Amino acid sequence: QVQLVESGGGLVQPGGSLRLSCASAESIFSSYAMGWFRQAPGKEREFVAGIKWSGGSRYYADSVKGRFTVSRDDDKNTVYLQMNSLKPEDTAVYYCAADRGVLFSRSTDDYDYWGQGTQVTVSS
Image (cartoon, rainbow, N blue to C red; front, side):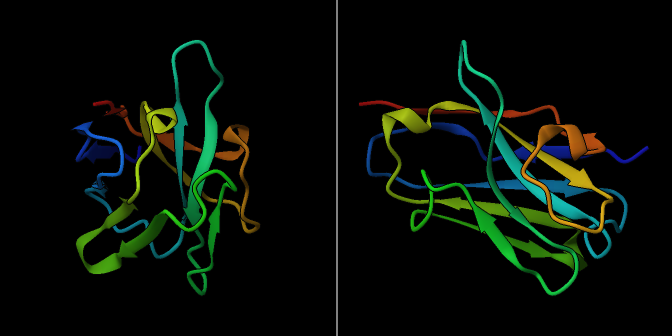
């Protein structure tokens, strides 16, 4: 069983930045695609960003493109989500997830392991 642990959430003013981390005790990131998702109150969980295990291709939701950057450090078994120019609508619980599939997916249904989530609140 793969365990993922997110950290780095918090309260930030509009326009501010946060960096989320997703750590695993196992060396999975070199063979799993990793995704970041978020879920706001009353809304469905949605794809935010992701990175493939092969070649490191990166994918972003249109709503965060140009503001968020996903990266990974295989030596540290950690995936990051750098979030800049944050907006109130970015407020949500953010989750990282791991997918063993070959093709990158933006669907929550395709991810095999999930972290517990970390709260991000953007407010003045």
